[in-house]
Amino acid sequence: MSPAENPDPTWFTRPAARDWSCSALDPHRDAARFHRELPGYRPTPLLERAEFAAELGVGRVFVKDESQRFDLGAFKILGASWAAARALIEREQAPPGGTGLADLHQLVADRPATLVTATDGNHGRAVARMARLVGAAAHIVVPDVVAPDAVERIAAEGATVSVVAGSYDEAVDRARTVADRTPDGLLIQDTAWPGYDRVPAWIVQGYSTLLTEIDDQLDAAGAGGCDLIAVPVGVGSLAQTVVAHHRSADRDPARRPIVLSVEPDTAACVLASLQAGHSVSVPTAETIMAGLNCGTVSALAWPVLAGGLDAAVAVTDGEARRAVSDLAAAGISSGPSGASALAGVRAALDGSASAARRSGLTPRRARSLDDGVIVLLSTEGRHR
Ligand SMILES: Cc1ncc(COP(=O)(O)O)c(C=O)c1O
Image 1 (tube, rainbow, N blue to C red):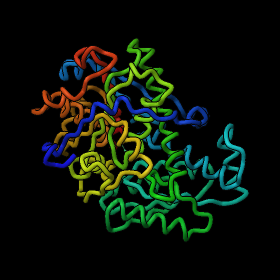
Image 2 (tube, protein in one colour):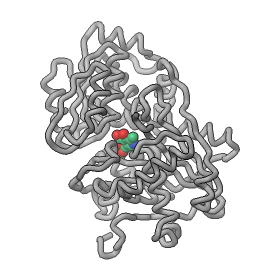
Image 3 (cartoon, rainbow, N blue to C red):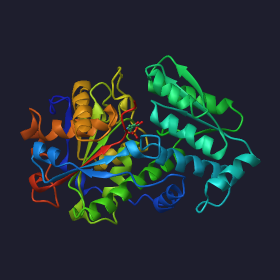
Image 4 (cartoon, helix red, strand yellow):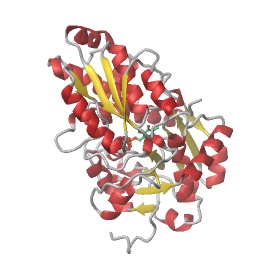
């Protein structure tokens, strides 16, 4: 669709996406088992907040609180840990499945490894933590827009940190070079490009633990599923997991939720790509939603998002800031990237364009979103 046909630069919707199907994200059960064995694992809370349901005029609102993911305060370790484990196992051609931290430690003791990645913050810290857990070295590349305290948190995991003058995409290029030049370097990148998709595919599998936790928690809360799920988006790997989880052919098509992606208006590469009808890179600028500051969609995520994402919205720093403080007032620690999920749902259901936007968001399970269940993925906590 050309921009002229879609005049709203902050919004895209395509209800037909709900009919799109894909195969299940196997072997995500192995990933969930692996996560359960990590020290300190427990499902992060799914918190119901009636005040947001009342504000948005919907049935129930739940917030998945990733501030409590281990002691890292973000969901990213789910992907980084599983991908690092699989990469180490594959390097030694060891059998997959049932391999815990002790086995990975032994693999690294027998043959050293340096885990390398580029990051806007959370993924790099998670890769550095995983390296520490298995006795590997870590080299993390960050663009210079990343805040000094985020760089310190990565270094505190024992990683070497290189700061590059440039964007996230440029940091990814540098990390590729670092991994190539480092003896026993293993690139654990959370975005894919032609020729590099095995590791990002494991990362996407790793994230599915978050979705299975939510399924169980919605059942326990008597909600029995959801009607809309809002996902903060950087390169789109997490959104790929969400779409693949809810559009997999083994799930009931009559219960498929609307999947809404939320990006900063300064880095809305998924929105721009959906509007262009093909993957496009966008220039990025500074944003408080640091984890979402990415200009290019993962090549692995793009076909899944192009097929199965129902709607995409871009939000401003001001909208994210308001969401951070409203979530804090509701007792939930949420950083700007995580809180963007609330900002995005507000822009879709509650903003000045809400009537038009809402008309593109017809649920299947509930009669309308007025009775519907909404899940906000608050993907990170607020760092103090
Ligand atoms: C807190 C937070 N939320 C969401 C995302 C988006 O994930 P993805 O880049 O897979 O779209 C990130 C990515 O780093 C993040 O740090």
